[in-house]
Amino acid sequence: MEGRHRQMTVRAITAKTIFDGEQYHSDSALVWRGDQIVDIVAAALPSSVIVTDVGDKMVAPGFIDIQVNGGGDVMFNSETTADGIDTICRAHRQHGTAYLLPTLISATPEQMKTALIATESAIEQGVAGVIGVHLEGPWLNKDKKGAHDANKFYSPTIEQLEAFPWVERGVNLVTLAAENVDTQALNWLQQHHVVVSCGHSNATLHELTTEKRASLNGFTHVFNAMSAIEGREPGVVGTALMTDHAWCSIIVDGIHVAPQNVLMAHRLKPEGKLLIVTDAMASVGSKTNRFVLDGEEISVQDGKLVNSSGALAGAHIGMDQSVANAIAWGLEEAEVLRMASTYPAQALNLNRVGVLKPGYRAAATVLNCDYSAYAVLVDGKLNP
Ligand SMILES: [Zn+2]
Image (cartoon, rainbow, N blue to C red):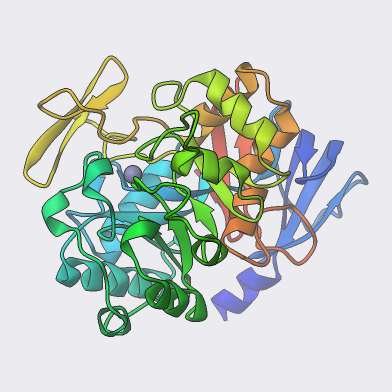
């Protein structure tokens, strides 16, 4: 009865500015019932509506981060449990993220199975914020391994792919080096609705055949851990930027990719095909600023995450700061907000998230004037 009563309660956030993903509404209210948006209205609300006024702050579609390795001192690789996912989602809500894909860095097949099962169970238990899983590797190229353990890399067979307990209640996204995965395996993934993104790849244009490119939905953290553009060879970077049907995710911390290259990617990609990811690690929302990956200690030094040899190992940034950066570098505010919400939803072929429209899931990010996160609405629940 309690649950039923709560479903019926109508709530609203009133704000000076609401951006619905397409248009701005001034001095309006975002109204929702249960976990679903009712409307955005400028008129006075009935007294039965429970209203939270956020004053001069801005309400935007809830941010969606499709690459989150950890947060709140937890690495998904170390805690492949529903509790681990919950901790990561909570940490990223402090930075404006409504929904995310916990992202497993190249692991053993056993760990991958555990991660898939944990994600399924987190969604089933109603852990707020989790909408699927991202397996980053281990089907990668050792020449572009980044912080991954190349000993775990292999090229999957159909039988191996079939053996994984893929998530049924959410999205499955994999990052793979397309040159190391054969066409049959790529086709199997496509047929089973796994979203496929090319990354940690050293492919030449020649290796990324038309057939292989057609089976790719996107490219992971463009510019990072992929073969560069050269005069006679577009590499994965050039191919990613010029493959119109495929999206590119990009890290906008100002460390992984030069701001000028973010602007270049935005100029080259068709509308809606460049989206922000954090690639965040356990240090986001952390008390210690250090964690362990594959037995190696990673720590924050001068805002960078580095391993013992000084190599970059993921990003120490939240979605809110990423958005602030992209706007500071010259991209239009509305476009940057879409790059953090609408476009990632489209990249994952998700319905009912990514914009603030009637019938959509009640998810919104409330931003302070400097774009730092003030609050996050996830499935009708306002945090904090
Ligand atoms: Zn990576």
